[in-house]
Image (cartoon, rainbow, N blue to C red; front, top):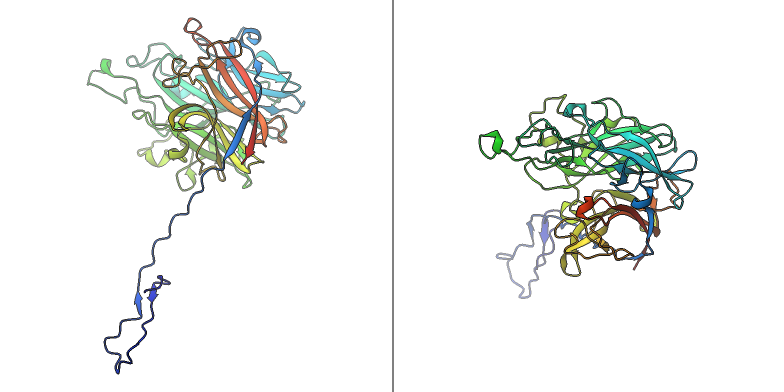
Length: 446
């Protein structure tokens, strides 16, 4: 039999049992061969982790802690420990019909947080997209000294000028014309107030093509156009500083006005003070630079579209990114719909693990819950709070370890807290009865 192909040569041994007088007709004992392509490495399945949840606690009570700005939890809970040794959580936003106003929770520790009604960042709610300041939410914050706090801002532009297909003079989220980008703001007083650079220097990540309200024509008459799919970069995660000295952030991306598909992109920088120094992952490396289509002509936007990471595995997970010192892996925590125990539409909070921020393991379930949209709305997923109120939605899951050693709580170990928004609102109050809840969470490797 032939041996394996080695260095493009294959060999075998031919034994002459009959003492033939001549080598004529003897089978060949070597031949040229083609080396087989190396088999892809077998990816191990996710390590089984047992998750245990403790007793729920209310951090922000809508009925008691609301300010005149009507603030409520509308992004993932983030936290920093500022230079005064106070906990700052820039996690409360007043939602439209006013222009979104950002406020903070603050206190000496996580058990004594108070809602500060003074606005920390005011949305300017501009009508023209090139002003780059519309409906804004501080979605992520990061600091290394507790004094300078970098904020990563989710900015929604709802076109009030292109009617139809948009809503005339309406800049609120009720206007279906939605283009999203990320902006930058900074605090130099420990997270109490934030200042945004003047446009366009506040831009951090924007799609490489301009907003077009007529991207989806139906007939030649513009009156029959329908709004494009909401698209852009949104919902930035926590910032993680890796051992290579780069700062990383994960972003939910809708890359097309005509295709509703979404995924998770990742970008990095070495300079947090320069919002336009971030580069997106293109599938091979961090090679996609910041491009502003309103300043630079981009004939072919495709090379500047970020590549989704582990799309087949994590879908569009994102929001909460930490490094887990117990599991020795990065951890994403997010809402999603995956298969669990042969139920392909299990709605809830999930976590996924990664060694390199690019390749993510199969998500594992933390808890099932109503997510507020089909097939995960409260008519299908019946969940109740301790007072037997039907939960209309739980969202914005994030992980915070109160004992994390760093200022921005980017690390966690086997014990931490799961923070999330719970909405027990009804249609009568526009589903805006939202509390911020936390639950002790424990991870145990099996």
